[in-house]
Image (tube, rainbow, N blue to C red):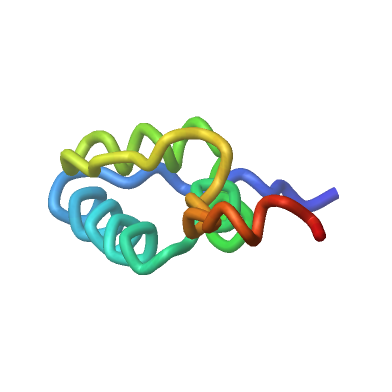
Length: 75
């Protein structure tokens, strides 16, 4: 069975990788999506994002646009 473990990154390579993840995260990708795409765990991707001072979005996905009173009535 082939290992799915990703190689550890150090120094400038780690920082450059984390900055690419941050750019994708700010472009709208979720941490889960980044983890799936890179093969790293959710926690590792989150740690990499935090290592380059990424401002994380609140839990629960992207915020939805506010509804007007009429839209929320369901009539």
